[in-house]
Length: 259
Image 1 (tube, helix red, strand yellow):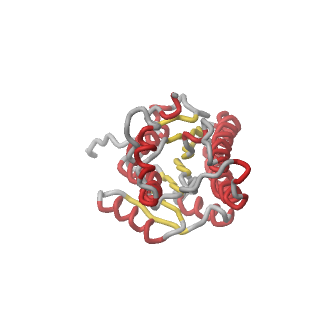
Image 2 (tube, helix red, strand yellow):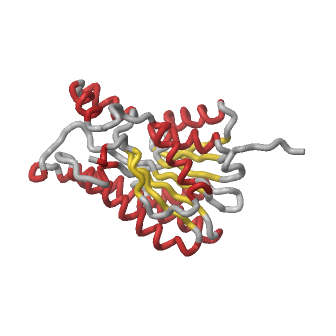
Image 3 (cartoon, rainbow, N blue to C red):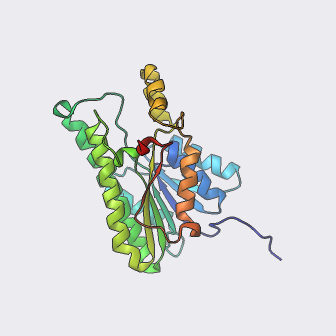
């Protein structure tokens, strides 16, 4: 008799974009721990290899593909590579993106090139990912997609107009896709983290040590999140325990958006 397992996703194939670090890495590790064969995609082979090693050292199954979400053809190939031998993709987590950086600018002074980068990466990149993931899921009338947005997609953030606008747009993509594909059994949701202890945030704090206390104070729980806490929400949204949930933007933000 085969041993029983409480893993939720045995036999499932999952793709995580932006899987080389931070939330994407934590999501890939968490999904693999639940039985997924995980493909992580991103621009840097070394960090992707690190994620794969974490997964395989823990007994999971993972591979990586170097790709840039700015390139639609590359995104299409990544989705195909992540699918099962039969061409089925069960789960996708879209975590690739760029943040607002460490330099705030009021609207009239906001750099156009920064806005363009936010739209190209966070909005167009997510659109390309959704487009090809959904195309892969539709023939099987099932699948789950979780987009990593931000608390900045739910509220305004002074000084970071481009970042906030791109994150609001990601939620718009999420809700529209959820409505388009609910009738064929595909669920699409977003997670909206507050500040998370990732390499990007660590770099911001290193550049501006006074920023750390200010960032922590903005979160009523009195601390910033660990990537694994965001990954827990991702796993829940991918599981049958959230089978009646689609089209939501779920804050996981220590109370940041409750103010």
